[in-house]
Length: 451
View: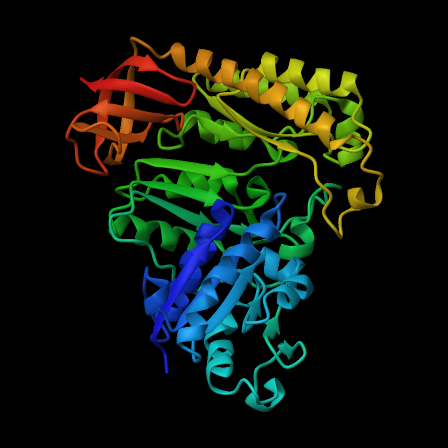
């Protein structure tokens, strides 16, 4: 029965890695990947529930893809991931042609669930021997049970041929319970992938020609497998031949240990770049968010990082308009953004998420004021990023080439160790490390000529 499967991904790198896991697992059960939904026997959307308006985007895309079922009634349309876990009731009501809803801990059961969805839609799931699944009104099949032990350590991932970068999930779930965040409710509690399984994935990626590996986790620096923490895992992964660069995301400031900072400073393969979410520059707001650190502690961490790793590039997340955020709280955030001088930032308006503690608080900042604050801090960050990039003009940078540049014939595009996009006058092949001299810059890109 296996046929062609089309997978479309919404959301973060964790979802990208999960899509590779889904495709690899189903390939082991006879499915072949297609990039054309019209040619698919199974269409799956792997979704994210973290950001505002995500549900509307997914509903629109599911509705669009559902038209293929009018031509092929045996086609299975499914939804996976965080949104499947979080909004399953609303989405199944709004997209009645949905056949399958699968949470992030049920991917191991996907082959059996797809068999059930394709061959026995009218048969009660229990009669088919599919555990932990239930029908909602007869359709679709739903399997969203969270599993405190599931890490998928033994399942294969499918990467596109020629990929230069590999996303490797080293831990799943989160124990932080920040008041604005739904992740612990849709992905469960923290559990780490065994170190040997992680390193096996790194070796496999290297054998496939991957040059850069990014370790992933909601709180990636909380990783621990026995005596092996993230610092030790990075040191061991750096010994794998062929891997030029290592990164990890997203860490929590409270878990940035001295040993991890030392690994970043001492291991050449660990890139001098860190995404370090701050969320707010106000101690009052940070306490209301249950972030577990103060602005002073965050500043001290930044100082220690820059002392050990002088060329480190820092990026961050900021939420504006959190409940009871006063104008002076927002001003404090802007001052911190200026002081730290982030190379990049993901900036968002606060929006309520059901299940979270913050959802029980009055959304006290108006949408107009949220929009004003967001526009202000975006403009501020654009100026800072442009200035941060200008300091590279005239300097040499090492660029890991990823592809031909889209808009500049005779140029290639890639990333510097600081994860800045660089467009280089060169014909170097993807996967090549090229030294180049920066001649121009924008807030987002370096323009360079190969040395």
